[in-house]
Length: 111
Image (tube, rainbow, N blue to C red):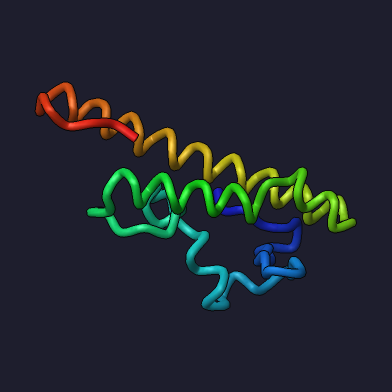
């Protein structure tokens, strides 16, 4: 389920503010879907280091504790919490895929 407000708008985090945008907007499209690579904003053939870097950047941008210090509404904090859950889930899924691949192909390493 995408991270969205009660009325269906998506939260987009900018460097200095958070805004809600329509689901039809280009900014919201990156958050739609269940592909863990899309959720983290990396290609399907990204290296584990690239995936980890993208994950850490998203955590830094989207962590609800960080956003709480910006005095945002509870609605936006709830959206951020949902988004962090999706980001964490996506990263965990990719890690598990990498571990499974490493078991099949000795010599590969997980994130």
